[in-house]
Amino acid sequence: MAFTTIFILAPFALIASAIYSYLIFSEIGLYSKIENKLIKVLLNIITYTFVIVIFTIILSIIGMMLLVGIIGLPVLLILNVIGIILLFKKIIISRKRKMKMNKEKEN
Image: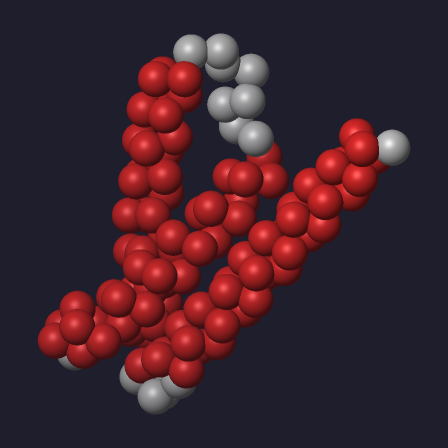
């Protein structure tokens, strides 16, 4: 069970946690009022690392519990696919906003 958790579930949990932590923190704009870029980058790195570790542990535990019923890996795969779709959606929306703002600046 430990082998399965470490080598099969943990990579998928790590990917899902990285995607979801980025989506969550990009929406919140947690450190947007800090002017110093170095402090802002350091705080972002620390926060993302902490959240990714916690999300990975939680998702691995949930996946391990579900693996007893042989549905842990598909659940993590579904979470990864949903996260990737949400990430692409966010990227497309932000590009459309930039294009719209550029057109407004030109006019």
